[in-house]
Amino acid sequence: MKKIYLLVIAIIPLFNPNQAKACDSCNFFEYSLLENKSFFGLFYRSRKFDNYLLYPNKTASVIQTYPAQLGTRLLPWNAPEVMHEPEGNGLYVQKSKQDFETYQTIEARGNYTLKNKWNFTFLLPYEFNKVYYEKYLNIPKPVRDTTLFVQGWGDLTLATDYIHLIYNPKSRHTLRPGIAVTLPTGQALVKSAIEIQEPFDPIIQPGRGAFSFIPRFNYQWFLEKQGINIGMSYQWSTEGEQEYEFGNSFNAFLQYFYQVSIGQKLILVPNAGLYFESAEKDLLQGIEQELTGGKVSFAQVGVDLNYTKTTFSFIFQKPFSQTLNGNQILNQNRISVGLIRSFKM
Image 1: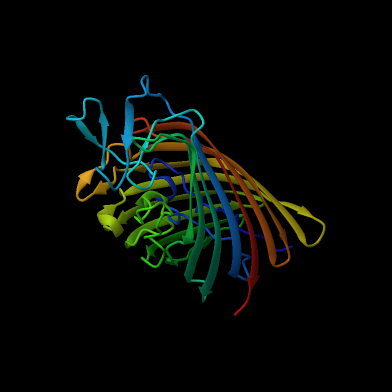
Image 2 (image 1 turned 90 degrees about the vertical axis):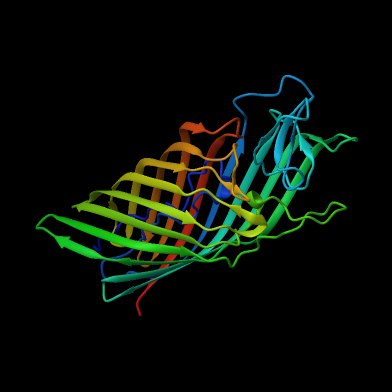
């Protein structure tokens, strides 16, 4: 019976206030058979945000969004506070319990391993983003039940890892230092359908229009039918479209897995672990955006089901701690489903 590594789909971002842009592709520790490590996969990811820590006490407390004045103004109007929210085009929104945001991704991923020493990976996402606000204050005519839809190609990520294997009589250690680069290939200037054709807010754009550099490190310890995965990475981003720069972020995960053989060809791998991300504040024209950045911790459970060269993967994440800068919309549950087919070259 072939032994397998655990599939850790850590591309599920630990979305802090940077929403879908925190670090979509920082950590991914690929599934692989010992004899066959190259693969192609398709993934579906879904994550949701709703609820706030606080709600405005007065209807006069409104938020003016990018790109109109790039600030929050709580009456009187001569006291602006720089902020950032993903509402779109120079309108106003009053935070409500009905507000929510959903980010869905269909992603193609290819992986090639050269001589069991070098690993090359690409990730290409297509994004479907939806933002709903129950109280959308388009002065002087307030609008209720406003929904914004944005979809398009996300940025291409390319990654390279060096694979170092250490074998003992009963255990195996795998160390994988590497680096990933996200290229400004996605759609970062998708426009809204309102009268003035301005691009949507950078946070809900499918792409960034910027380069990101992501050094990362993964370690796996495998003992008979169980093991542990540990990974961490740090992301530096350059300024992208609309003079917007996403904050640098750090993330890490710890995961335990156990392998169960069912018959001669079927392998079941349940897993459980923790995921953490911390991000700095974003910058708009060099000015810190107060409602961005923070820390989020998730608990996650999942299962991988492998049949010969095909693997199905499912992961569920739930936040248990989040410390965000300001009164941002909160992280909620997210899922990831993947289908992988390995091959030899």
